[in-house]
Length: 324
Image 1 (cartoon, rainbow, N blue to C red):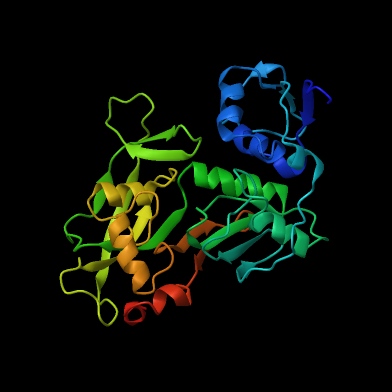
Image 2 (image 1 turned 30 degrees about the vertical axis):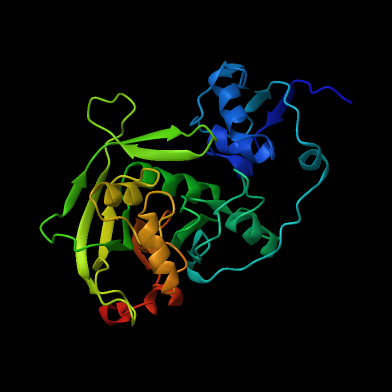
């Protein structure tokens, strides 16, 4: 059996501005996430001969040195066939396109996912010179997803996201009656890895050196009438519009759960017993939807207001339709 050796990977244009950990998870398919993060933390992974952190952003031409890592036999020998798939388009021009991402589809391959939206989109558009994700959505979240079609558009849009100049509003159905007077959640978040390598987030305090300030603005849209037959003793349902001023991982999910109002169907931070009740009454996914996104066009002096309507499986679940 051939022993693994040191490898050098050259970052191509399609991987520009990708985080180092996500780049390695894609390149080392089948390797446990815990191992990937361990070799990064230990300094065995080098970018241009220097130590790098998991969140280091890669650029075209960067040299990534990998220590000897044995790939699983199947991952090393089998290529996964990526199916071509189109997605509903909310807006498109020469610079960018906005997709309406369905729930249950990852935005890209990696972390145990063979392929995602971007790989399927590239397969469906083989003549496209460039298709790159501008930002991310959780796999379980539906709604507006931006894809850049030019390198300059990618950089300008990502700069806009990092500078928090975008307006991102989500719709979330939560457990209980949200107090209308509570309009701001300003609670820092701490990202960590579980022993199984899964990334999770928890609330923390201002003294935590790894905590990141996280701000969510909450507006009550209305109280939702549950489906027929809903138990009288079950909690009330409230539909919220949540605008995030910071784009932290799982921010809305953790903020709302911390406030005592978890999102319906959230299998990571939610009320699991309540989720089972929701599933019995037909809600088969998390009720979180990237509803509206306001951006400045990357090449033209104008604002773009993008909106993805609630998908049928959410808008038809109870009486949500009357709010739109």
